[in-house]
Amino acid sequence: MVDSAEPWSFSEEPTSIVFRGESVSYTIDYVRKPYVDSLKIRDMLEQDANLFADSGFQTILPLAKSVEMHIRLLFLGGRPSDFQNKSFHLSKCCLAIKRGKSEFIGMSGNQVSATGEFWSRFSKSDPRQRKQLVRLAFDIYGAANSYRHNRVRPWLEVRPLFVKNLDLFEDFMQVFDELVK
Image (cartoon, rainbow, N blue to C red; front, side):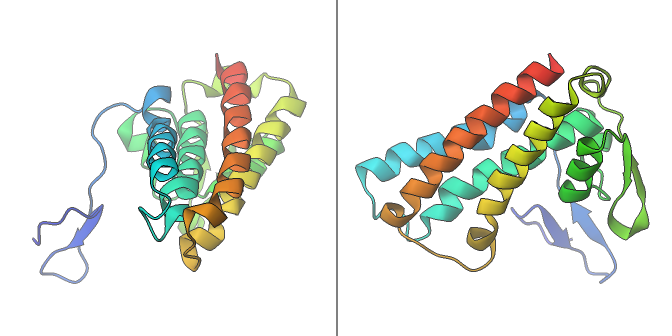
């Protein structure tokens, strides 16, 4: 086995992949860590705008990651075996949530069912708030796509989009908290 700091690595056999996920329960505080990190990076970039050539990767992507982690926690729960479900698909999950469904067909055609400890409270909530949560999730996650795939931009260019996404993310957290607590 090749040891790696990456989330996965290849063994000597080409068919074996090891996922290096967490073994602790996932919590709201845990899924908000990328958001907190993005605030720290923002503060560093405000001090030195040239610190990173790819500042969107450092600031906008962590917000998108945190959105996905929130939705995973909501739908799948905090147990590692559930949270790390390899069939999870964010957009399909969000569409199921928007439609009031507790399952969807995920990766490789596998059914993914809501099992999270927050789901029972959430599923009884106001459908308009559920739709608002999904809209915010899509807006935040969608803004990160170009930074995930092909865009490298300096902080001065990324900053306005980060500020906008930060506002959206804070709205997302507020709606999330109202729906699950």
